[in-house]
Amino acid sequence: MLRVHLVVTAKRAGAPLPPVVLDAAREAIIRAFPVPAEAVTAHEWRSAAGDTALLSWSNEPEGHGLPIVCSSGGRVAGLTGHLADPGEVDRLLAAPRLGEAATRTGGVFSVFRAGEGEMGAATGLTRACPVFYAETPDVHVAGSRALLVHLAARAAGTGSRRPEIVWDLPAMESMVRAGYFLSDETPFLGVAALPPAAEISVTGGRRAITVTPLPDPRETPTSRRGMRAQVDELADALLAAVRPLRNTPEPVRLSLTGGRDSRLLAALLHKAGIPFVTATSGHDDSPDVVLAARVAEALGVEHRVARPKRSESGTELVVPHPRVRGHNVLFACEGMLSAYENIPGGGSYDPTPRMSGHGGEILRGGFLQNQADPDPKAIRRRVNGLFGKNADLLTEEAREHARALASPWQERCRDDGASVLDHLYLTYRVGRWHAASRASLLRAQNPIPPFLDNLVVRTALSIDPLWRRSEAVIHDVICAFAPRLRDIPVEGTPWRFTAESSDRTLVDRLRLRWPRRARPSETGAPKAAAPRAFDPASKPWNWRTTPSPELTGRMSAGIVGPRGALAADGLARVVDEAGVARLPESRMDAFWHVYTVSVMLTDAFADPVAPDLPPLHIPLPA
Image 1: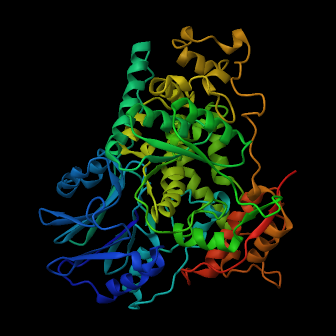
Image 2: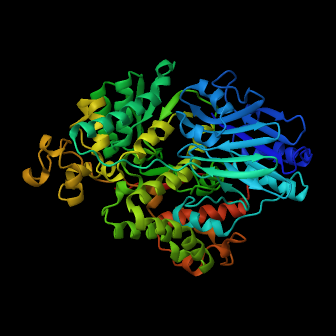
Image 3: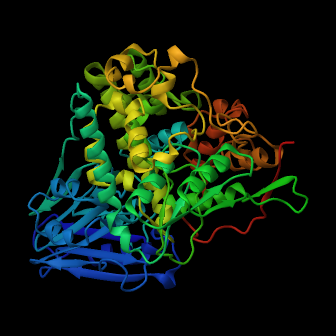
């Protein structure tokens, strides 16, 4: 379910809000809430003095979950996402420190609260449900959709019910580089995303932002009992996160792959006794499909395969026109995610709980999980790479902007590089990439992400990130939940604690674990239990990264106009024209990112209806 909240308060206590601000918000919801207008219900609350307002919209069926707006003790509150225990809403309404209370409440949510002469909003530990905020000379604005916050603030500044969008062009360098925002910025000038575990509050017209520090990791236990205790803590937190699903009328739909994270969810649901079915997208011979089927069979659950759409001849893959993909990601994700990502279209709301493995890297050390070398110098190079990727496509102004964003993280590398990669993942990969993707899912689905539950994240962050990086922690949780999955291989690389047994740091940290396991260095490489018909380490063919004239031609036309100049006004301030012209087709991810920014600047959220363009036919490999 997608709930949209907007809270506005005047800077001068007791001064009524300008009517144009609320009028603009009501009108802008058509662009800022990407669902059919007829499916939307609205709720408004105004303070007695008229200086504070909470506006809320939802497309969920009536009577499903918490009310759109809850009230108690003279305050009202609207939540996005879900609470593990709906009864906790009263505690959030009464909490003197809203942000701290939110991070210690089970669930995945953000909360917007208002009362006489006050307003506040808070994110959880991941900000997977974001809070955006802006300020003008007359009002403070916070909301769950960045475009809505921008247009309400612009209305206050211009007096117009239909203000134009003003872009934050330097901020878009992050989209060009990474395909999402590695910052707290948005495409809209003056609008920022509240950090994880943070609260914005306004009392008497004065704004304050308070950030609750993320939990510090404990030392790795020096005994097997201590290790087992921490693994059990994580297992208990995961079980608590899914406990409300025991009474779900429909089986949970789990998107299962051959990887680690969705496998952990399958084991979790199995252990919790929650009915579920599984599905995998891909071709029949892909490792994801083959391994997922083995996992489902071992657990005795239904498994289905969703095969990509093909042409009648079966030799071509049929995919949406890139302009349609760009439009969909624009409205669903507010231009904060690349059209490279597969963003589903909208539809009627289905309350059936759904799960996928997105965000599971939190339990494996965040960006440490694919960091080959945990040496501090290597970690600093990784941070430089995150903020320097695709920098050759940027103008000097945009490159300087990226360097400024990298600086505080580079400084933190001197003290604790492992925690930097851990927190970078939580702050941006989950807090921005996943948050944007999640917003698209919420339009028509009911995604439940146990990995992002506040109490699960709090427990995970308290475990040494290098120990989590070894994957021994989640491997033990999986085996505890579903022992029969122990010998089914994982897609891609093998479990890290078996593949990196020669890593001196890892040996020191896990030396007490290995007496129970044979060391690969002593016995040779672990024997694969997978069928010989396929290689679990192979990667499936990806049409998005495979150059084809039909695809790249249309994308190039969306970036460069007929006269050779960049198609979108303002794009030249972000990307170097010569660099884009030299962009090789081997870097299709960057092609998608630049294309997305160009579509956004050109379309400017003008029409909520996607263009009617024929799909593309991409030749399948032999």
